[in-house]
Amino acid sequence: MVDEVAKNVFRIDVELPGNPLRATNSYYIRGEDSDLLIDTGFRREECRKALAEGLRILGSRPERRNVLCTHLHADHSGLSKEFRGDGKVWMGALDIRYFHEMRRLEHRLKTRERFLSEGFPLELLDIVYAVNPAFSQALESLDERYLPLSDGDEIRVGDYTLKTVTVPGHTPGNCMFWAEKQKIMFTGDHILFDISPNITQWYGMEDALGSYLSGLRKAMKYPVERALPGHRAPGDYHARIRELLEHHAKRLRGTEEIVAEDPGMTAYEIAGRMKWKIRARNWEEFPVTQKWFAVGEAMSHLDYLRTRGRIRRQKDADGFLRYYR
Ligand SMILES: [Zn+2]
Image 1 (tube, rainbow, N blue to C red):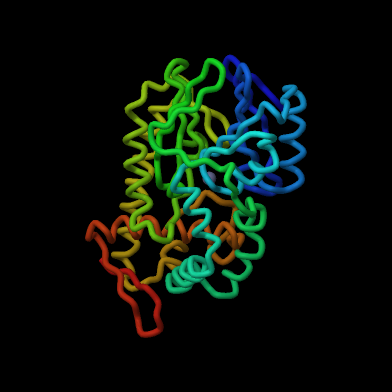
Image 2 (cartoon, helix red, strand yellow):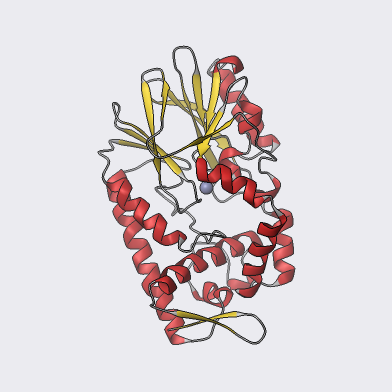
């Protein structure tokens, strides 16, 4: 399915089978001597087919095509290498660095260690690494045709000049792209409208949620008239930012209360007490990948409270991290 969402900007619906996000919005901007594809879907057959079909309908030619990834997540960058044609792929500089980092054994061990010390059961963690599309359907490697973007960098395509707006949090090098003339913001996953973006912990990032909330306040200053998100339908940009700020403030209060009510729990146990919009009868029945996202999100809220001195964390004799008011 392809629709024109602004002059010379087309949205391709790239389905994500079995994923609660349902689909990735790939955008295609038609230029004069080159075109730009923004985000791609997972590196798997269904996404490949949907994207290829969209590009075919648009008459896209590989020799005119460049790709832009709003962030490194596999549902955005997974097919970037296959679909860049003869062109290049731009991505936030920190996400490119992080992509290389994530492939180092030490990094993988540290992340695993952190989940285990936060109480995530070992047997579930092994399943997560085997089935989570974030690992299995991701881009395998980057090469010299991946070019880093920093805040303020511009990409020109046809009548559009896209200015890079770095908004770390959802990923370390997460970016939005601002077309000032048309007052359009490509929000990626920084601002989504009918789901709230997942904010997890990142190894080496002390306070991912704090960075994300600063990024929302930064986003607020742009006079955006139309937002084009990475998933689902668009909506009122400024109203949604206010909602997301309020959502996290409420969630932070709730997390602090859970810690106060029952001191000494692990992040895994705390996540089990938090409220989640998911069809599962209880914490035990959460699909394991969703559980992993939920614990990551609980960790980012706990990090936020802890780095501001509202709660403290202590390692017990067995190496588990436990939280106290
Ligand atoms: Zn994402």
